[in-house]
Image (tube, rainbow, N blue to C red; front, side):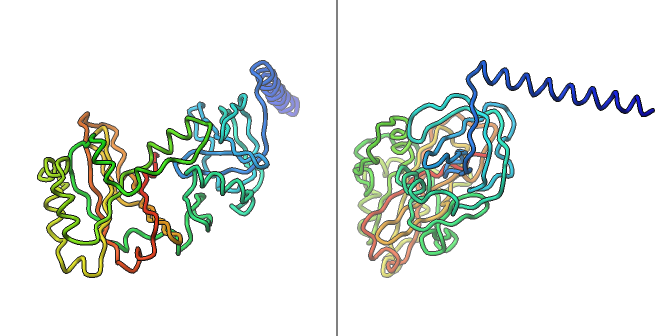
Length: 313
């Protein structure tokens, strides 16, 4: 009996050694490398490993969730392919092992600042860790449930002049030699409009691209005309109306306000998906999201912005 147990153990050890050897040889032949660093979950769901002061995006092609259970700041060991030089750099990963727990305090502040400037992280000065993600503290990151927000259907709008009416579309994304990052920043920005009076809202509704689309509803989503019925002179006595437009390649998606970043003289409305349909229609759709905010909140705001906050599962 003891001999049988010994034989089984010998076989198990032999197989383990062979598997380790195979992985080692394969890694050498494919120029794989290893990195020890800190894990960071970016704003769009991208996993990164921070090696020193260098952030590296991790592209998982294994079909397994290599990042399950990891939290921002955790110390990790990563088996990966060659590292492509960009900012942030990126690589394909094959294995990730957590070495110890950590927190956002374990990531250099200059790395957080650089990633925030390029919109990989929420653009607020004060960041805390929450559920493994980076989010604003109570002051900068406002809970959207505090505000009356409505979503209405307006069809697809591809009129460049319409986007030129927005407060934020004249701003250029941060300069960077990485065209992938530049295009990503540009595609995430959403046109934002601000109305201080009922007259300004009515002028916007008479714009051709809006007037021609404002009477259509879509399923349970009302038309823009219907959504505007509640905004009258009394509303604008102590409120400002913010409006964000988002277009989508399918009418199956639904959107809502993820949060509102308000930091000093900067305010950014962040829009996210409310659903992730597996079966999607092929119609081009457009949506207006209106947010009623008190005048006291925006009286000192000099820069308004809006962006799509990817929350893909």
